[in-house]
Length: 396
Image 1: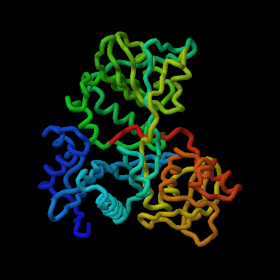
Image 2: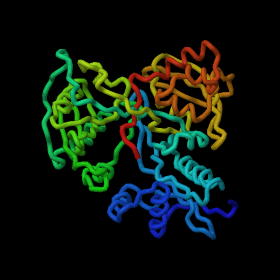
Image 3: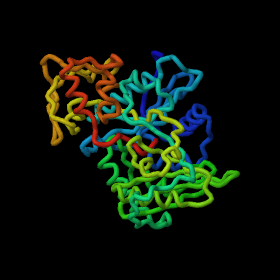
Image 4: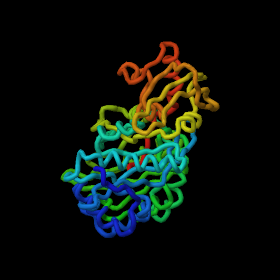
């Protein structure tokens, strides 16, 4: 659409943005919900596509966030959300124009990364986003019991929401600092979270909280015919806190099942007498990362072994690729443009997956999505493996 206008939104656009989101995601929003959203996303954080004849025909927005890289560095990374184009205006280049305008704005601001959680996994790779974490959803049978030799450190107590407004954000910050792919939560985000509005409960109860000096869990209960389903969110920064919180959660009575998300390296399954009582219900893409400044991102990361390699990054959408020399290891790294011969060739979307360690370089090579000399691939593969499985912990 040659006459399409891409511009920042104004307050006057909010009713049209609300209607566009409702039509695309098939859910009505109350005035309270849109007011709460605007505390995190004021109008200027939206970008809209406007057709002179049809009015608003596309939307995107970006939360003010950061993401943790392997090694603990947290880089500013706007969280892209509210992306929609109406069914009446598909396949006219509107989404492409919105993404180009939004990412170009991020580059102009000097931001090194962008990120999003996607409604469809097939949309964003063309714009240079790569899958950076996985979402593993599980259900835990109420018969699950901890082994006799499982840790039993104690130290957990129930708390009211008013008692955790400082503790929970503090635990989350500590957890995020040691978890690759972790997404930050702003003060405004926590404020909305603790309001615990009815529209965020999905028919379940208000939140219950469990606290430990090094951990925190929140859960809701939704009653069914044979008991309640507990939906659990848990963050722990020590193995002792993790074990203590799960010991209390598994001791709850009148429970039909516990629903939560676990990484594949979470130790809970190894602590049960019957590991089959944790059932994986789905595994899907979680966070998607888009690298905007290759030297800044790769230079901020830490690596599993010493590495000195020249890589060529292809970026067909935004032209932010090039050839770079990466020198690094467990204690630090540098990444600079170079004219040297490349030993590794990779696209920008797949680099987004490598940044957190969500995908192995050797797997990308086997899928013909990364090309490398054999010797370079072996070291490159090991260098990008993080100490812990990446997980974002926050959908947006």
